[in-house]
Amino acid sequence: MTRFARNRGALLGLLILICVVLLAVFAPLLFPDSPWKMVQRPFLPPLAVEGMPLGTDTLGRNVAAGLVYGARVSLIVGLVSTAVALLIGIPLGALAGFYGGWIDEGAMRFTEFFQTIPSFALAIVLVAILEPHLTSITLAIAIVSWPPVARLVRAEVLSLRRREFVDAARLAGLSNMRILFGHILPNAMSPIIVMASLMVATAILLESSLSFLGLGDPNIMSWGYMIGAARTVIRTAWWLSFIPGVAILLTVLALNLIGEGLNDALNPRLARKGR
Amino acid sequence: MTLLAAILARAAKAAITLLMIVILNFFLIHAAPGDPAAVMAGENGAADQIYIDQLRAQFGLDQPLYVQFYKYVGGVLQLDLGYSYRQQMPVLDLILDRLPATLLLTMTAFGMSLLLGVVFGLAAAARVGRWSDSAITGMALLFYATPLYWVALMAVLLFSVQLNWLPAFGYESVGAGYTGLAMVLDRLRHLALPALTLGLFFMAVYLRMTRSSVLEVSQMDFVKTARAKGLSEGIIRRRHILRNALLPVVTLAGLQAGQLVGGAVLTETVFAWPGIGRLMFDSLTARDYNTLLGVFLVSAAMVILFNILTDIVYRLIDPRIAAGGAA
Image (cartoon, rainbow over all chains, first blue to last red; front, side):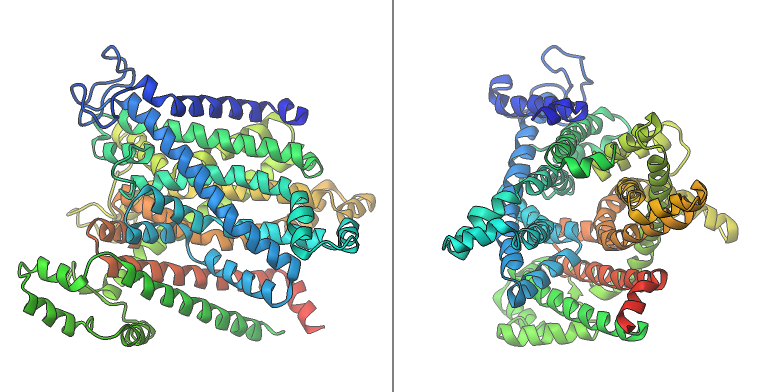
């Protein structure tokens, strides 16, 4: 904990993330109107009119409201898709590493197959075929992001399963499942936590890329959609593309900084190499 | 194992993977919403049942699933990727038409990002802990967190709209009729921004990999031995650290190349670059699923091919693999 707090980058990241989360949580209080509602003249530059601090978009919608509601989508998709990816990757990697043999062989072939397929292309195809919806987007991102988790967990379990505490647990008569999920996995948690925090960042980038291409949920305002919609007017209203991009950049940067801070705090032996 | 045998084994594995992707593709096509026959009939402005049935028979859509599956896999093996009803062209022709542009873009971006990433990564590792290291790693962190398509848009804004240095879109100046060197220069000017924006993200990835790999190798025992032997720092760096540190970077870069194809969809969309990424975007908006899945299949095949090439390069630069197998 103190090691994390001493890392200035990680603290900055945490601060930014807290701001984004607060904005997302209190979105309906800050902007009671729907972000889709046309409230003013279109193309108002930032700070031109009271109550529209970031101006309005091509259809006269409040950019600030869109930004705040977009934060919700980014965070939800980022968190849920990472959780689903962990739910696929952890058991698969754990079983492969623990049992070895044909289970390991099969699981790793399966993982390799998914790693070979270009992930963004697969995500596009999945969302297009399942129809763009918050669920399909989250699922598609989870499906393309679990393989590294499975590989990491497998490697961790492989290195832990020959340790003495595992032998002790076996002598105590515990079942394989109890040993694996109760004793081995808890000891493998710290690299998984680090990877998960970085995965949330990647998932947010993926979600924004999908909605930039027009594969976002048509009923939900998102940062990628805002940039995609403002793309054609970049010559006349550059700030409409600029502002949501900064929001994505800050959020993803914050998560990456936190991930690195966690890495330094949880794996001090690895971290010292870089310093 | 000899190089040839290794390549053959690798190719056999790749063929199995490709076949699995073909099978996945078939099921994805059938999961796609809408009846293709009804869509086609709608396109032609005649939606009566007889016409739809006729189309269905013509394209074999009335046959049982396993017959369609057999025909699809057989077709793909003969390089038939289906027909784009939207563009009135076989999907393969559409893709082959666009493939050179994508190869040019991704290869340029890959070469550039690997070169810059390694150079900056080495520079950062050599000055570890100092401000120049922090500046380089900070830059990498920034590019790593920026959405690719947003960098592309901002580059257009800066270099095309504001400074008017480089063209904002396309593959060549339309109607300029350049020939010879002028044409090459014109194409390069068009290539500059897409390749740069696609490469920046991957440069950040390779930079971080190079830096940490160099730092890791620097701590190894053989480096200490070299230093104890009294070798000069320059020789240790070049002959001992660099060679060992770059191997994992090259392998991982090769495996990462698949991500470039995905990134190309975004870059090509922003810059109206006439490659398969742009084709993918167009088929998305047109709901042209045959083309969409054709592009998916071809990009997966490209990635597999690239992985094999990386494998061969790796074997050539690291003789230990071949020697270990033969012993």
